[in-house]
Length: 175
Image (cartoon, rainbow, N blue to C red; front, side, top):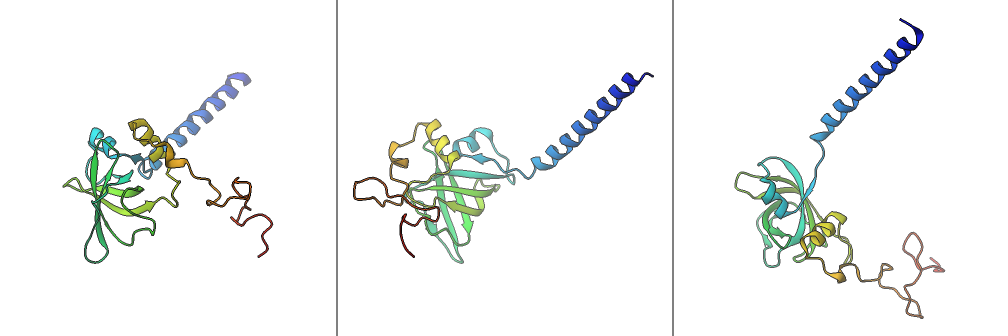
């Protein structure tokens, strides 16, 4: 075997080992990755009970029901489909009907999404990118979702948004 053949054999073997290692890592991570789905996507894909995923959409007005021991049920909709959600725990302060929500959990045998984590948007203009993209794709995007100034509504005398520091304090403010 010549020097060139040995070098090519070593390089080829190294690439094969690297490809095998990458395949094993990706296969191990596949089970821990949780993907975002809308109620329409869940209905179309026929997600099997017990499989974890993230559900995103808008909390359906009039669907929020509170039970005993912090148990709540509500419906998440994306305009085309609705999915009932059951959650036991403290809801985020900004959680309310008609607002965007992302819940993480799994479907049960009855088709109810059992959430163990519920996330609500943090202010009146924020919407998770996945939820916004899904609403745009479904044709339910409203232009006023992102229409307010990002400076917390503060404006300068000239009517322009006031400049703020990275901590959210107005520039020039003494604290």
